[in-house]
Structure formats: C-alpha cells, structure tokens
Length: 134
Ligand SMILES: [Zn+2]
Ligand SMILES: [Zn+2]
Ligand SMILES: [Zn+2]
Image (cartoon, rainbow, N blue to C red):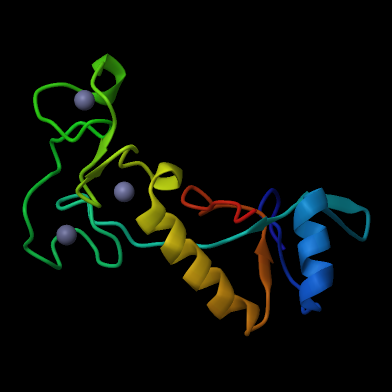
C-alpha cells in the first residue's frame, strides 16, 4: 500500500454496500477512507456518443460543438441558447454527463451489471470519470 493511494476491495452484501455509499465513509483500521463507486463509461469526443473511444468509430465530428446547445462557434460558458443534447439529438438537456438520459441509462445498466459481481471500492487515482449513482 503506497502513500496517498489506498485501495481496498471488499466483498459485501448489496444492502451493506448501499449503506456505505450513502455515508461515503468506511473505517479500515485507523484510516477513514472516502469511498466511491467507480463506474466508467467510455465516451467518444468526436461524435459525443458513448460506448466507444474517440477514433474507433468514424461518426459525425461534433467535437467543436457547444456542450450546452449543440451549435458551433462558441463554448458553453458563453452560451445563452436553450439546451440541446448533441448526443441524443434532442432538446431539453445539455450534452454533459448527468444531464443526459442516455448517459444515465448506461450508468444504470453498468451498476446493475456490477451488482451481480463483487463490489469494488477505490480511493485514489483514476476517479475523474466516476459518478455517484444515487
Ligand atoms: Zn464516436
Ligand atoms: Zn451553445
Ligand atoms: Zn442527451
């Protein structure tokens, strides 16, 4: 176990795991760790689709679109347009992760898949794409 990069893998009952995720803390020895459920969904920054990596699929290049309204020529910070998701091709929400039902659906699928396997908690690096599911 290296300094500042602690990882623990625990086998638990689902109910207990949910309890842990709710409190966000677990005591391992003398160390109290923040825990997160690590779920990563691959996202393509070319077509803004999910489930494949940039370059694996030659879809429409949407990499320069505004993440808020799906139009070109400005960034979301300067955007006053109503939200439009270029991933779903629908209006009403932005194309960023938690606003998008397509992404949430993938997260739900993935967390259900994981519930059938062992539950892994990590504390450390590689958490940039992690989200909470509840
Ligand atoms: Zn793509
Ligand atoms: Zn915009
Ligand atoms: Zn969407």
